[in-house]
Length: 157
Image 1 (cartoon, rainbow, N blue to C red):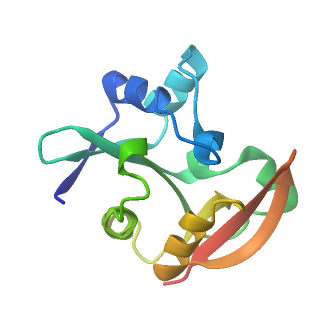
Image 2 (image 1 turned 180 degrees about the vertical axis):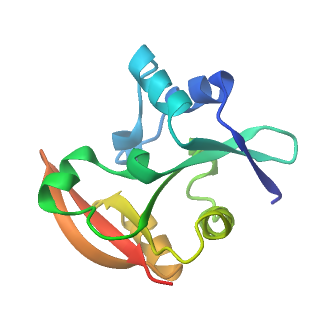
């Protein structure tokens, strides 16, 4: 699978906001509206495309990758670069996760050298947690946002 990183475009943002995941991953479904479009287009979001220019996924870095309420629990203290990822629904559960996230990690490592990485994942997402652990992330802390428990995970240098 050959992947490329490109700037987020309005077309890619619309596609992402209309992705629909099956339960329990429907937690990650979004709504296309002005606020969501602004989030994707005006922050540090990048599109990941295949060799034909088709959208495969996206990632973000920095504050956009954080769950805002986590700051109240001290989840985002320290010198780390936060990273968030998403993959089109049709590609999930097909064995693409390891190569996809490795590709993104390589890019982030080259862009933010010598900074540990941190991500936040919903506790129910065992599939993602397993992937993150295989790629060297370890659980750091948990916090609640309403009924959802989130876990921060850190990958040291």
